[in-house]
Image (cartoon, rainbow, N blue to C red):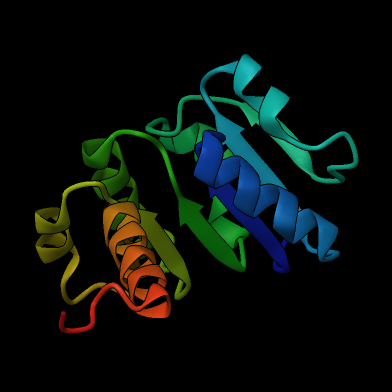
Length: 141
């Protein structure tokens, strides 16, 4: 379990990360409360899918979160993600925790923790800027 990557949340982001890690030969466990979410995983996904409530500490321990090499928190609920980030950092003391937030202000609430935040809107904005620069739209007219 020490070399396992745990992905909590199997939406678009979580499933794409889980699929990528699995294709790269990583040991992956995906946790989601909805069994249908696992339909997003590739047919060749070689990891484990566990239906569980991620806010249930015993369910997380049962899934191996306490022994994981990396934890990625990607549910669609910023408050759940914030809770899980604190839990994983404080209780499980995992040094590699990544959390998705839609609201950039949530990042202030993880300062001082061994947690790195991912902001989808920021990534999209940055990509837009790169595309715009590449097309010459940002030049003076």
